[in-house]
Image (cartoon, rainbow, N blue to C red; front, side):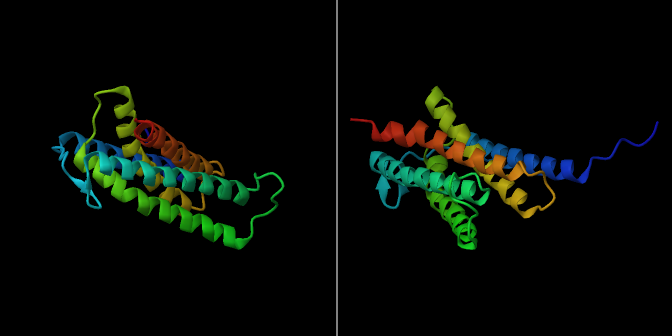
Length: 182
């Protein structure tokens, strides 16, 4: 019996990014399940339905920012028809937009997990809870992927596309539902 075969550095990096995503997702899920929800908690001084409306409004802005990020990424990867190569300021705008999206998402996530925890009572709420946990896991993996120069060309667009998809799922499972209420 010989030593087990070694994993290639590329596969190790990909496995590390996936492991980080799963670890962050699992930690948030576990916290959300064992945490006692505080339904009276506030978001910037707003409570109850007022807090949910504010989250829906900020979430809608985040959805717009996520699509802005998608357009910039398509331009950077020269997949935006007729746009040509992206100038350097577009790369900076993309980085700044990602940081703003992440920072603006934090108060919403904090309120969601402390006020409600991770709930699985209905399909819509479960989808929102799980997508919220996975969003931060996927974000952590994307940060790791963007820092690695030795990954396949598909890894970064996959990570970014996953984040845009998760923002759309989070928005449709909560903000859209909240804003559609009479």
